[in-house]
Image (tube, rainbow, N blue to C red; front, top):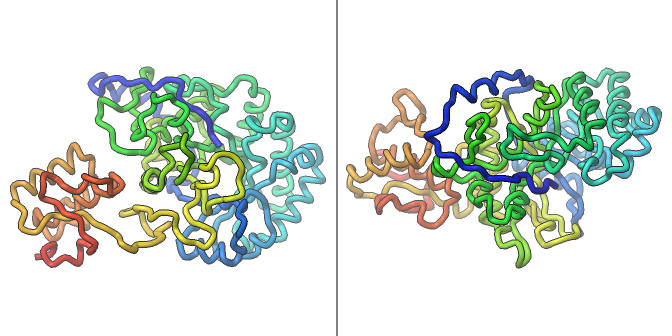
Length: 460
């Protein structure tokens, strides 16, 4: 998991921003799909681990189309066969030394764990080890060899174009991470990182990065605001600004990803995309972890999913997909460490949601339950002038995307202030994770359990 990323949280008034100065950093060529996806990590340290058939049933029910396994478990891969679900399999760290020292061992691994399952199981990438540079330094010298040997075996089977090879890194290998434009990889690892990046570039692969704003926030000694870590809207004068590029950062996630882009460019690699292989927020912690709560986990993951699926990209590379795997599918009660280590899951072992994600407008992925769903709508009989003022605020300072309300757009009809205000109020309510006081708008809004489209006064 990632460690502290921000050495400095720098704020510069928005009035000093000059988009023209930042443009020079946005013309770098980054190739790969422009459509981002959300995936989920599947850990297995549960005392009552569901069987593979049950796991796949949950994935289908939640319409999860991308998963990452921490090994290449045969039963799990067989259960995933003929589902179309895209699978990242992993070479566990304890197998890394053998594969990195022997081309034959790597070929055998690919034959046993890949060739015996494709094409029925849709394996799309192989993660060789996990956070090797930060947790298994003795294996670092053979990491690139292991990746090359695995790739060679794929080439021999004509699978190298459909299955990419990479290795997940902790964000802690990036030093001086803020401002992002000054970030660079720990120079100790240059003998590994340079050939590793050359390999990714030459094979059309991507950098795998684990991004944990929770730890960045926890270890910042109060420097990082909680809202900044949770993707909550910030006033412009509280946004973090890179003084070198004048790019504005509204969340930790984007700043970490851009730090990695800049660290790669420092080594003259400017066309390697990034996939975030782990990110999430714990729903429970001990007394020293007061912000590990269901509400914050819900807010982070809901906002993360929306952020990724909106193809927002990052300030450095707007519109460039940053596909992300949420950590993780299940709470893992057998994990060691603090209470939070056991509580990163979206579901318990029985497939019951730990909390109900707020995913309005983000498609059906992880739409895990709508029981007791609440909505924020215009209060019946509210003064129309006050409704219009509240609508203007929501679409302006409230930062709600009100473009669907424009003429010719899907939510334009009915063209009434009640209908439009209800749309904007509800969007704001969910952006604020349904927090207390976020459905008021000077008394012209109210909470309901009925979908606004079903309310008679919504469609007069």
